[in-house]
Image (cartoon, rainbow, N blue to C red; front, side, top):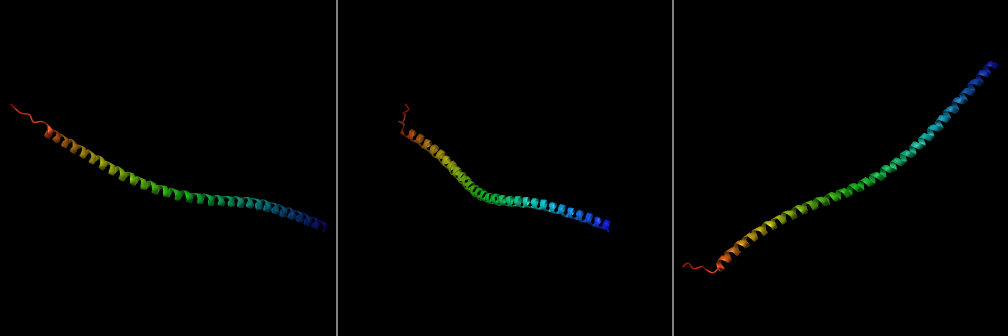
Amino acid sequence: MTQQGAALQAYNNELVKCIEELCSKREELNRQIHQEEDEKERLEHDIRVLSEKLSRVNESLARRLSARTTLDRTIAETEAAYAKILESSQSLLSVLKQEAGNLGKATEPQRRDH
């Protein structure tokens, strides 16, 4: 019976050793899980912060793009109006020169042919 007792004691010791190893592995796994959970929380926080920042940047960008479109339209309209003013100024200058020439001829003393 001593051999059976010794074998039983050996099995018991080995079983206790296996249980201790499993508990050690479980503790290590728990430590890794906590590390990853902490990392996950940090990443989720960073994502929230970046998402909020992205939203603000998108809103600002939309306002600026709209303002630029308005400015582009105003510039185009102003340039078109300015071109019309230049054209009208050229026409007016041409008419004034022609009239001045006609007035000059009308006010010249008449030459008498002998």
